Length: 248
Image 1 (cartoon, one colour):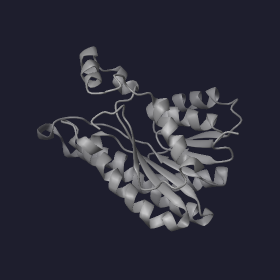
Image 2: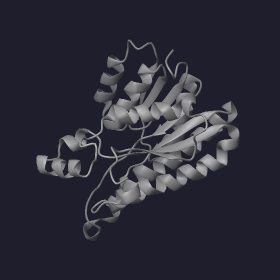
Image 3: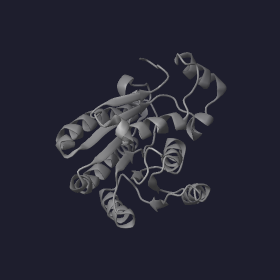
Image 4: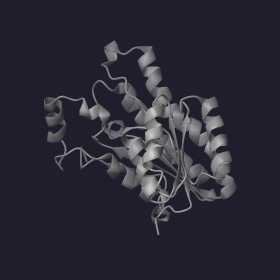
């Protein structure tokens, strides 16, 4: 039997990159999947078409996770459509990289809104349904950049570091209701963004990774499945790094 049979998972930012890998993996593990996108409607529909024979229900919702009101409406609609949410994966994220001397207020605010405030928005609105059910798993997508920092990514690093403290706090607040909250910190993962890097930059990345390769979205998705399943039933408030020993 698949590890997530009969469950429903809500994933933000699920139409590309790591989010798409998570959608596909959770469907393969037997979970019904609700995922969000902001502009990639054609890509979202293509994913649904690809997964139509998995035997699970998959729906895509146009929703901006950085909006409190849209997050509230999303959770309400997903509960109405699926009846429950067993796992929330806060995956939505953006970058607006530049050195601090050049960084604008808009670049700072955009990253903080999408990467950090979205985690608050979705968690805020999913907690009551999970508390009523007395079970749930919340998985927040952070980054190793939130641990070690990176020049030119002060906004991104700050947003991802904030997720660590948020995760630990939520785990302590709702643990008595059998709700777990953990974070994942990916390292350099093969995505559309890394595909655009030149070979010299990729070589510099690889030089710092003991496993000598970029990670795959599916490897992050595997970690999500573990944290969503009963295999991790006594793990909460923790961060799991998926980084090939980068800066460990």
